[in-house]
Image: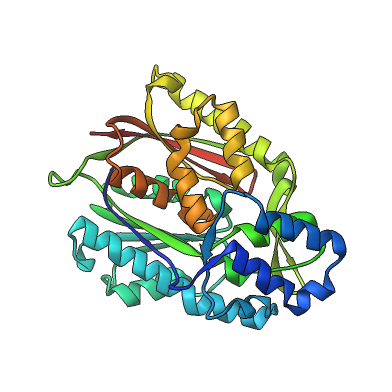
Amino acid sequence: MFVNGLGTANPPHRYTKAECWDAFKNSEWFRKLGRRSHMIAETVLTKDNGIEARTLALESLHDVFRIDPDTLHQRYLAHAPALAAASANAALSDAGLRAGEIDAIVISTCTGYLCPGLTSHVVERLGLRPDVLAFDLVGQGCAAALPNWKLAEALLTGGACRHVLAVCVEVSSAAMYLDDDPGVLISACLFGDGAGAAVLSQRPDPGRRCVEWRAFGSLTNPTQRDALKFETKHGMLRNILTRPVPRLAADHAQEVLRRVLDEHGLAPDDIAAWIMHAGGRDVLLALQRTLQLNHGELRYSAAVLREYGNMSSAFVYYVLQAALRDNAPPGWWWMSSFGAGFSCHGALLNVA
C-alpha cells in the first residue's frame, strides 16, 4: 500500500491559549467552577504546555461555553462533514486523482455521531461514485488513524480497490464539557478541531516521493479502559483524562515498536523519522524518555501540537505531512497513534 496523496483542513478561526484564558475568566462557567479549577485552567492556559493555539469551529470563543446536547450536535453536524470533505479534496488534489477514481472511503471520528454516518455526507460533497464502498469507524479515539489505514490495506491487497480515501475528522469543540474534574478541565484546554485525509493506493505514483506501508502492529489493553475514554453524561460526551495517560502512552508505544522492529530485524536507530501522535506536552516528554529519543526527533509532533493542539485522530496526518514537506531523510519511518481503549498502533513506512 502506498500513500499517494495527503490533505488536511481546519476551521478558519484560530485562538491562542491566552485568548482562551481571557474568555474562560469572563464566562458564566468560571463562576460555576471552584477555585481549584480556576488554578488548573490558569496553569494550563498561561504556562508552557506545548500548545500556543488551536483552531476551533466557533465564530467566537463565547460560543464554546454554550454547552448543551442540541448545540453540540448541531456544531458537529455543521462542521464535521465540511472538514472531512475539505481534507479529502486536498488529498485528491495532491494525488492528482478525480473523485470517480476512488473505490472506497473510510472515515474515523469520535467527537460526534451521525446516522447515516459521515461517509454519506462526504460521498455527496465529493461526488464519489454511487457504488463506492463506504465505512464509518466510530469510537477509537486518538488512535483511529492507523486502524483506518489497516482497513484500507485489506481493501487494496484483497483486490477490491485500487484507491481508498482514508479520512479522520474531529470537532472537539462539539464534545465540550466542563466540570471540576481536573482531567475533564485539562482536556478542554488541549483539544482542537481538524481533519486529515490520505489517498492510499495499490501502486506508487512515480511522480511523487514514495511512501510505502510495510508493516503494522497493534495493542489493545482493556484493563486500562477507564484511564482514557469518553463517557456520556447529561446527554453529552465527557472526556475522561487521567494522570497515568502519558506513562501508558509511552509504555504501549514502546511495546508496539519493539514487536514490529524485532519482526523485521530492525532497531530504533534504524528509524529516520518519527511520525508520532502527541496527546500533549507530558505525553511527548514521556515518549522521548521511554523511547530514548532526543528532542529533535519528535520535532514534527511538537510543532503540530504547538500550532493546533491535540486534534485526536487527525493529528498524525499533520505530522506526516510536515515530515514530507521538510524533506525528512529517506529510509524507515515509524508512525504511531494511541488513545482510548487503552490502545496503541504503529506502522513501519519505507520512504524513498
